[in-house]
Length: 167
Image (cartoon, rainbow, N blue to C red; front, side, top):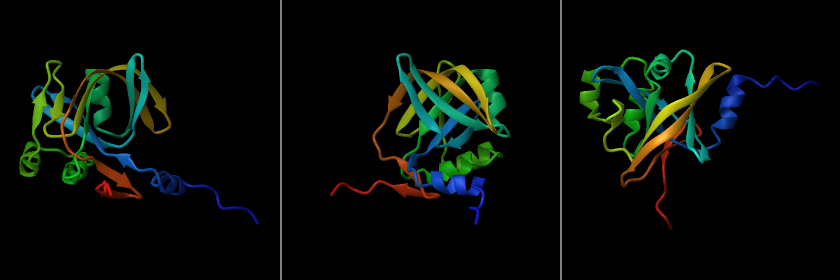
């Protein structure tokens, strides 16, 4: 008797056992207009130099924007920002929908939009990219980071979660 082949569904289920934070990667779409993508594929790579990596699906609207702009922000969401995560997981994004959700941006000197009121905003400059399967891996050199108080939004077993209070 042979074992059934390991599928992409099996792979997703296995990786859902690893709890992650939830981020939104943002970039300038057009002058004064932002575009974002929900991501939990954030990894610290190096302390010397300060490097992180993100993975972007080849079909994502974010991909050509990062390739063109060569800068992006990683915004770590707070526990009460699940609606932001759901919104930025969609391809269609409008100023009207963002206003309804209370999404606000602050623009950096490098013309990168960062989400207001998240627990961290990390500004990165692309230093390398690699195509791997159906994604592009972007290696970003961290230019700056700002931190704010709050607890993170988490994702575990395909559901949003929050940290439990300390016992």
